[in-house]
Image 1 (cartoon, protein in one colour):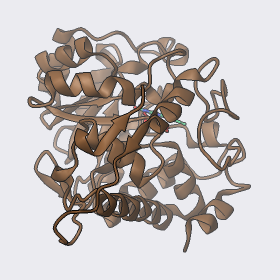
Image 2 (spheres, rainbow, N blue to C red):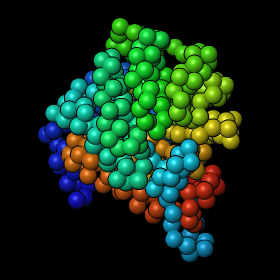
Image 3 (spheres, rainbow, N blue to C red):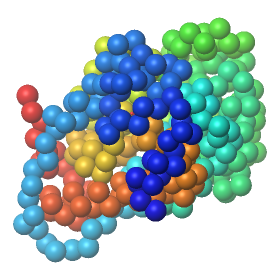
Length: 339
Ligand SMILES: Cc1cc2nc3c(=O)[nH]c(=O)nc-3n(C[C@H](O)[C@H](O)[C@H](O)COP(=O)(O)O)c2cc1C
């Protein structure tokens, strides 16, 4: 298998994707449902563009040790600090025939086979949350569920469902608070205060991750609520036009809360060298979204595993060229951010 074959397999099955040589949000701008960013698409586009302004400092003069890409998430060992971002609505957004549950199984299994973990999505129909929970049970709880910031009734019905079930962690994509479709749901999404987040963290009873933090103030609020991790994310540019890029806001967030909680980031990461840049600027791990959808549509779990291993080998190559033997060697000294 090679990546071109996976992409060829996905072509014709993901009719809403433009299959651009670079997945950068330009051709699909404004396409929601679809794969684009909201409005002018500028938040998605900027995520990708700003990553190019982070240059890598070549420095091979180091001890000649084996390269080790392994890391941990909440002390659980992973083969690389890369996770699968939650993606819901595979039919609506990719135009794919693949069912939501087949997609979920492909990402959960594909991630485990590559030695890491997948986040799963949520939607207006509670089954969009329940089905991933059930699939994760088949894999010994090795998956992360994501709950939208519903008003309390919607939270409670989902939390009740995970009681007595095994999941690795619970995330909440708090940045979905303004999505029009979800604002009209039976339990409409809403803004969450520190108190509301703290309540959700308490209800979760597993590590709790706040996804969709883009400011130092937001990170401090997530910390105050007791979150174990945040995902620095603008939802792939799908919730607000004209945002900063995630790689731009990451360093200050790291400086403020980095020694107190785990910091993940997503948005526009497409290669092992992009992952390296995030790690250098303070992330403990990176989530990848859109390309994983194509991998799953093309070759199911095998495609997902293949994609993650490709990212892992690109990360290892970058580590060789920067004299980093292990993930903890990667620091801000390894990159230069262009002004
Ligand atoms: C089609 C699509 C569906 C998504 N669904 C969800 C979701 O259900 N929950 C969530 O937290 N994020 C969702 N996201 C956002 C992703 O989890 C992630 O933040 C973003 O896609 C990362 O950027 P990337 O796709 O450029 O890698 C979705 C993104 C896309 C493109």
